[in-house]
Image (cartoon, rainbow, N blue to C red; front, side, top):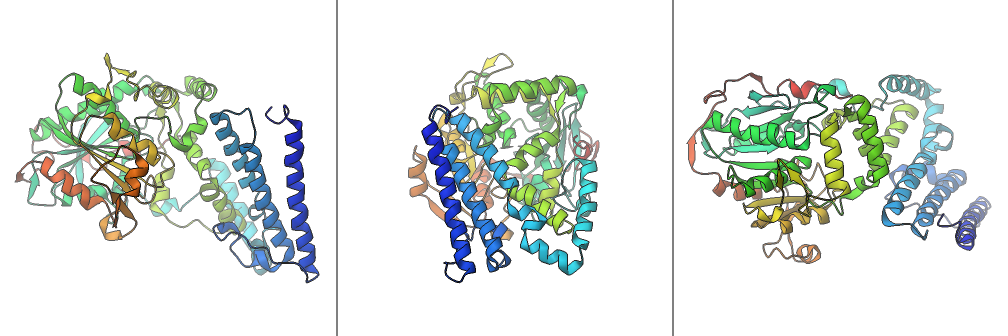
Length: 530
């Protein structure tokens, strides 16, 4: 309705579109006659980097016309009046989905690279691609990697340990020490239940868990159940009680230690913060310090996922969960893929179906596709209380009869944000330290939601920023921050060591009151989502 109320603006936008297209067509025709100037495609657009897009006037016109149309579509949304911020974000998102899908690179007869390949192989690439498409249609999702190359427990999630406790919601894993002595205070990791925990134990070279154990820490991690309809009533509060708090009891039984240092990753960090709010009011001191990996507690600026958040969309999700008892993991996986559709959808359409190539083995994408279901009660609570109503940051969320006030939290905090994170954006994560009454060490890592966290020192990749002055304004923090090359992991080690107590003889799983139930990574992590 934004343009129907102002038809003159609609006409103006249409004229802009046709003027741009006419200029491109005129220039293409002049080039054909040897008179026009060569157009240049932005180098950053990888879809059109091959020289074949620019050697022929037809394909040069196609990609330039497409890019101009894409820019026009985005400006059409941006300049529309009478749209609130959320409507504008949704409109931009869906306009982007349409324009991404319509790229000439996605079609065999408008992609010069594919035309050349088809001629060279006598069409074998398209035959192979059709077979791969038929296989993907059976599974309902496009393959992003060679799944046969990876297996949990074989070459992923390999760190040795034991499941020492389990209930309906979790298996608690204790990892075997690799040092003769360990720090007295155990470390509990609360991963997100939206994905599986082994993002922190992908392989020997990338494993945060293996590295932390090597630093002399007794590491425990929660492996969340992949729920079916029988767990539909398990709520956010149950995840606190039967997940985090039950783990604290189990760790005390296993080690005799009454307090732990805790790490929460993404929504696991949101649960940790919420639980700390409850514990603070109950004078429960069993968590000595908290580390947050890309965690949000204020969801006002919660990133790209907000495009899926409004009353209508959440009600639709809830209605669907009434039928199944859970939200299928494939639905969440699709949402994440759509946020980066050129990289996570259309690049594989071209590679798998047009080029006829098998996707390359990539452990991160294998983990990414290993989706988890979300219980009806928990997911509804999380969407409404956090994303829609932002109650946690406003002191309005209640768990187990306690209205949570984050300012009551005073334990030391290490807050890790990723500079290019589109799931938990830096400005949003920054707010966490301002809502607590804790001494907070903010660290900003290079890269995004995953690579900004999983960045082992041996990789010598990316960088991180520190600012010991810790100003209240993010822009000031970044302007005066000091950049450091490589991984932030050693910085965290320096921070956590004085909070971990003295050295004691290394603890083996089963040394305490809890006996091993099965080998790590356990059985819960091997249950597939739907």
